[in-house]
Length: 360
Image (cartoon, rainbow, N blue to C red):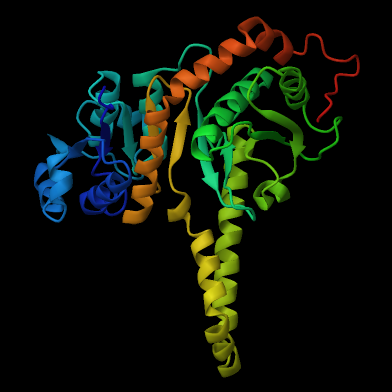
């Protein structure tokens, strides 16, 4: 049975068709069984394909002139879903002409179009945006929600944990991912009622292929102590931008320090291997590919400024999710927990009298 092809919004992002096509071509070297539907300006796409003859043979072009602008309001973009490269890429997934869509375009528009066109899968109330971030250990950490929904109740958080664990088993290759809820402290009494009720539900869900390790504070996200960090989209987006901003701050601070004097410049030459490793580790292109989990179809967001290698990583994430059939995995985990148990536990029924939750 052939694998479903990947629809690529070739016009999204800062660099357009040239980088999007090159990135898809790089990803195909690792996933050579996949074919692509390249959506956008046919002339630009054909010019980009001239440098990648193997990619040309594996691709079909769907021409369209219209593009969602980077600063366009989602409400306006939705009205043009049937004429834009982003909208047509998502529509291809809805119609069954592709198994997944990748775009480096406007995040808000992609999120809104995806929700409307693909809808949420059975058993999921709200989709979540999940991303990969570096840690001090050899594995990345998956964090969700990063902004798809500003608020989340206990039931939503439990669903995010199930989806994040399913993603971790595919992306990180761990059979029983360690899962934690982002909180202001690790003690059982800390946080909102929603966090404590979600913790109780996850603690009781011993049948799931995950290990719930309680709460985690934001300063420990990148320490490598867990595989999945679960939170609402408001807190998750703030945490993500704080982490990215700190990484840029440290990089710029080092650059300033190493150019402040002749002695510093000499020190830079001596320590260059270490600084290059740091730069590589913090480069967002090496962790590119945010996934909208919980939709009836795979939808992946690439950084708008991603280079070809960054796009390749986003496309590779998409390919792995299709190969592993992540939608089926999430459905199976939801069924394992049981709808009634999910509703009762996440609503606080059966919790201890003081409303707290123990963590392993």
